[in-house]
Image (cartoon, rainbow, N blue to C red):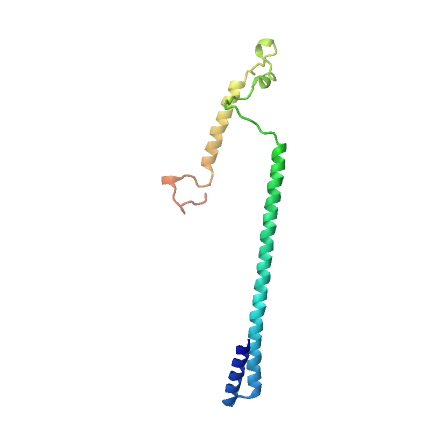
Length: 154
C-alpha cells in the first residue's frame, strides 16, 4: 500500500513536469482511485456470489437428505409384493360367469340376418373405398407418386 502511494506520487510529479495542468492530474488520480474501487467492489461481489452458491449447495444437500428420509419412511409403510417366479394368467372364471350359457336355456340366439349384416358391412367398405378413389384428392405413394402433378377436377 505504501509502495503504491509512492508510485502515484512519483507519477503525479512526473506528469506535472511535462506541463500537464493540475486539473487533469487530479482527474487522472481520481480515475485511478475509481478503478481501484471498482476492483474492490468486484471482489466483494464475487465473495457475496460465492457465499450464495455455498448456501444453495447446503440447501440442496438438506433437501436431498429430507427426500431420502421421506422415501425411507414411505418404504416402510408400503407392503412389498414378493414374486414367487411363477407367472399365471388372469382368472377368467368370474368373467365368464357374467354371460349365460346356451345349454341353460337362456341361450343367445343369433339373429337371422347376421350373415347378411356382415355382407352389407363389407359392401359398404367396398363402396367407401370406391368413393375415396373417385375423390379429387391425390392418391398414391412410392413409385406412383409425382409431386406437383395434381390438378383440380374440371
